[in-house]
Image (cartoon, rainbow, N blue to C red; front, side, top):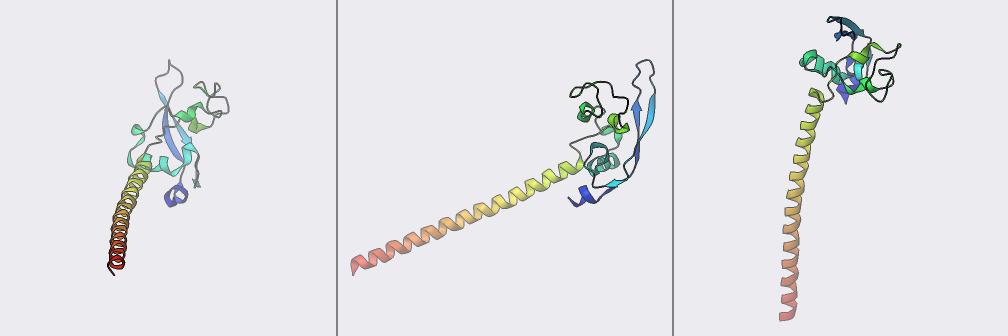
Length: 146
């Protein structure tokens, strides 16, 4: 959580393919972030970490947020961008990056740890119940013999 909300995401630049089929070039676009703790697709810490460690070639070139109202005239479907679409609509993004994989591994480790504790508590409770039952039978047998 500290990384997600505490990491500063600076402005960043990416190469966007040209929307015209006749023009095979690409244009450079800048995403204006300069924020800390944003959860928006282009300016969050998850994307920053993925771009830093994996590079832009690893990221999805057609992410799902291109179907939002800000990025598509045919929302909730893919379509051409509206005239006032922000620059990040064509930015690459990977929702299952390094940070989410790290958190999944930590969650698995914690689940394994607590499961191990529960198994040991059940074994200890079972031993305690057996001991209490045995003591109860011994005291009942002692009372019947006297």
